Amino acid sequence: MVTGAAKKREVKCPVTGMIQLIGGKWKPIILYCLRSDKRRFGEISARIPAISRKVLAEQLKELEEDGLLTRTQYNEIPPRVEYELTALGKSLNPVLNEMEKWGMENLMNKS
Image (tube, rainbow, N blue to C red; front, side, top):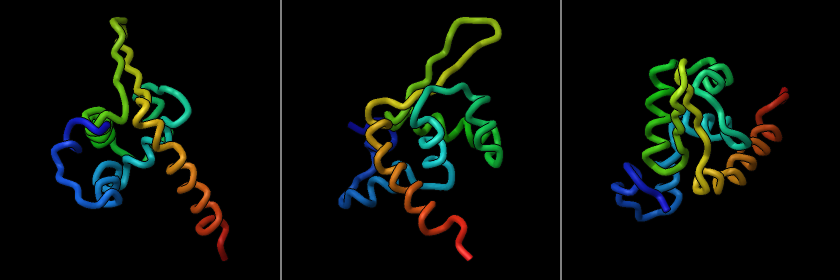
């Protein structure tokens, strides 16, 4: 079940609701990056070098508020924070995999 900011949006079309939830330039890429394992902020940033650290932090916060990922902070020095998909976030893996498949078939290595 969707929580946070996404829950506040009134949705009359499921496709529109999904686009509102994971749409934008970076959210699908962040979700794809986290699809198989939890990662630290620096790891995500390294895998998506075109995103600024500020925007990455904002997008991670929104995805957390929407219930798609969890943020775990460990009481260590230096501080360690890990991000991981929730069950709701993992339920998007088939969609992300199909997006990857479609991109490979239709956008990659086309003359």
